[in-house]
Image 1 (cartoon, rainbow, N blue to C red):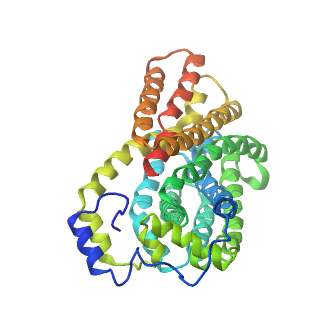
Image 2: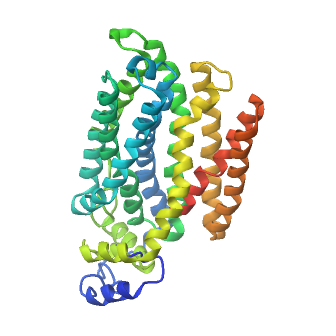
Length: 391
């Protein structure tokens, strides 16, 4: 879709002129509804409590499911499946191919269907794939499940970002998105603790510890997917937890922020083609790849990095916990500060240098304590930057 946050391209201007009958941002939504009695700050808090906690939980489960293979590896995953280091890396990589392919189609379905239906359906799908990942016996089975996990998980992150933009003004979006994205770091902390606990189930039912990690986490996602159908709210104009005046004020606020989707924008494929022809789309993709590649490399390999510093499987998983807690705190602080200052690019540059310093230390250091400290520095160049860039 055309990015209304930036200056419109010539093709964007043409689309706006052609569809002025569909979306007129200057027209007042529900002009007969009086919103003078609605406290805007209280309304925002009400929306925050209705949306952010549950969406954050969903992303926590999503990130936990895609990266827990790094925790499971420490409990003899590669040995039991008789796979080489190269095959293990291929199993990690194939997830991202299907994930990238199905992100855009998923958002198209989100616009066709209600968020409560589509996001819940996605969760059920990847929960089942995650559970089945614990039942594989060879390299081919692991590859197949990782591919399917990417297919089903692809829609959550872009879908929630679009969904939140339908509720909040741009000046309010950064902090909420940072809180949502903090679930990625919390999942790392929780994942380390959970993996250490589930490892005690090793041998139960004839299944190794790594298999139980996948099965337990997958079943938790299935349950959350079922609950999401009733918990996830749809768009502001149909939100049942808001009064008519509150629904009207939410939409009017977005209209005043020049967010055309607030006024009833319809899916048009010419918007998609316009975005594909816009050079800013492709530059943004390249920059975001530079942010995301370290994120997933860090998440997937942090347990192994700490393990190679001389710690055994369970201590290595437990030592990932404070790293992710730090990442969550720094992400929220940077998201808040970037919203207040309004120059996210400056924050990105500063924290990229910190992250780069951390990676340089990891490359050259031979001391476990210094390397462990460098891991904290590396998080500064990953989690805050990804969030402020996409916000």
